[in-house]
Image (tube, rainbow, N blue to C red; front, side, top):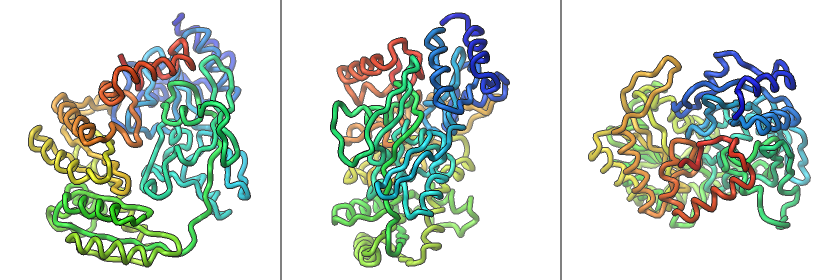
Length: 463
């Protein structure tokens, strides 16, 4: 890298007031919702308003060999968009327009900065819907959802981000603009570079637009089932029984006793039965009532206390309990919010492993799961004092417990991350899952897009 001041001067000459060098903005760009922060403070925050702004930023970055970290709303949970010393934070949050909606073709073209829930509010007026449903949908951007390969509550039935993107517009490190993918339902011309971009966490280019695959809003009623069990293993076994039966709920969420108690306290609800775990299941569409009755019978047969509601408002209230998990964890102390996935039949065994890890390492790990697809979110709770910027360093004993948990997930045939991404928090375990040959191959692919290594350096593929 040349003199950092040269890069900032060139950016200010080219982009004027869109280049923010205030200390407050640069400090904010250090961190995301994971609680992790980059070392040092970025040189500047570029608030891009157009594709041209992104291209100019990357041309200058390439000419001056200056690293660039792309940011959206900063809601990530893996440290993947944290900008540090000597780096440019490139914010695409202001690029938030809906460029096109085609109801007949079931597609929309959007800029990356639009909020997931805001997009769906507009689509709903036309009877349409973009299915990816992360718990952060009210605050996370579509571009961030794509960059991390986000998931959510509805994934088991309606798929993840990878299933809902037809194409992306990508600016390479040298400023060239690529239009990847297609607007058609089918399209197999050449290699599928769109899928390569999804989940790439800003390491191979900057997403500046997306062509999204839409659905029509689901007709019929919605039924919500709340089932409590004496313990989390019983709840996990019940969810596995629902999956094995061939049932296809839209949502199937599991909360263990610690997470359920914390959320009830946060929302000022009556305290749940000590030790009880809960499954919240939702069915939708014309057959919702019949499916709910069938699933309810399975849950009762596996030891659950079951209540079924046909009221949409009551269903949303029950889901609010699940969606309140993260703020509830903040009331317990500092948390390391994690994300692993296992085969759905292995959920009971994974909860057994979590209980063992709590005992062996002396830590508390309240856990929720998207039980419909085997994705768990263990929350490691610990006491620590934040630094002046509000950032907390995770203690070594918590990382040791997390290491044990990651390896347990891999032993059960699972994966290190189902939807949060690798970022900086999990890069040290990446080769354990991929193997050395695949890890090196993926690094080589990344370098074909970014030969100088200036895009989000140090993320995902650490040394």
